[in-house]
Length: 219
Image (tube, rainbow, N blue to C red; front, side, top):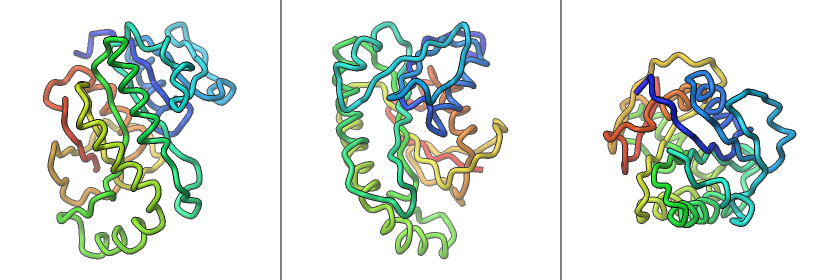
């Protein structure tokens, strides 16, 4: 697989994980179309990169970029952070629009970013479970509610999807060394860098073991 070149559409390509996906994909020799709401926010130039403007909440802005891709990576995210949570339908409505457009374009393979704390893992330390339940889930209740809705929509689709549930994200550089759990809890799944989430995606584009699965990832 390492020597195979793919055509990838990366949505939300100027975000933390999206930007890392773009850079790692280009480094690996893939051809990338980077979809962003404002191209000025992705000041990258590469012979295998095309930056285009689009918004998942407005299907007419992105549908034309889907056909011919080997995989779609949805790395969209809301702004606001831990203390700026507010009602959103970006994850559910945006990715529902994407899945419908993918079906029309005949593209099946796709990746979506969720979050480990939308469910309380029984195999993380007790104090972390308390923080997840009584702090994180409450501070991010709107975002997590929409992520749960998104996951249901994805799982009911005919796409060849992978949902990734990272824990706390960091800005550390890529290592390529991390643990995963497929359709299961990852013991002590506490941190992962955005770069290593991207590394997992780019290196599992055509891995049948993670198709139609939920993946926890961490160090």
